[in-house]
Image (tube, one colour):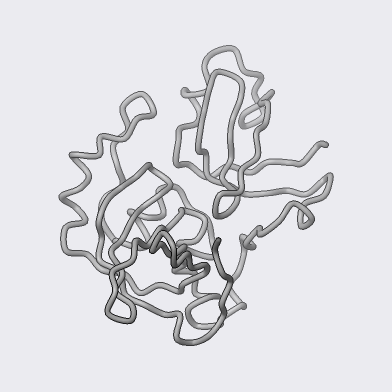
Length: 186
C-alpha cells in the first residue's frame, strides 16, 4: 500500500529509465542507499497541462512523432539518455520499492500561485458541470479515456470537437497524449 507522506525529505533526484506509455515514465531513484522505481504520470509533471508535457516542459526535447496514435518508444529513448529530474515523492510503496513522483512546482516549491490544473485525488472533488482538463490516455472512434491524476481516469463519449459534429474518426482531431477539456455531464 502507498503512504502519503508530505515532509521535506521527500524531494529526490531520479535518472530516466523507460517510457511505459505516452503518459507514464519510469525513473531510477536512490533513497536511503536503496534503489526504487519512480513513476511519473503526465498529470504530475506541471501545474498547467500542455500537450506532450514530458517532452516539452520537463525534459526540454522535441515532442514525439506519433504514428496512428502509437508512440515509437525505440526512437524516443535516445532523447532521454542520462537525463535526471528533481521530484517530490507523493506516495511510497516499500514492499514493491516504488514511488509515485510529482514535478509540479506546487509540490516541489510549495508554490500554489501558478496552479491552473488542480490535482484530482478523489471523485468527491468532481461535480456535475465541472470543466476538467486531462490527458488523452485511450482513444477509440467515439469514446475517450482521460487521465486526470495518478491512476485516476474517466471515460467519456464524444459528440463534438471544436464545435463540429463528428463525421469521421476522432484521430483526425485528437491523439493520445494531448490535453483536452471536458465537461462533467453525469
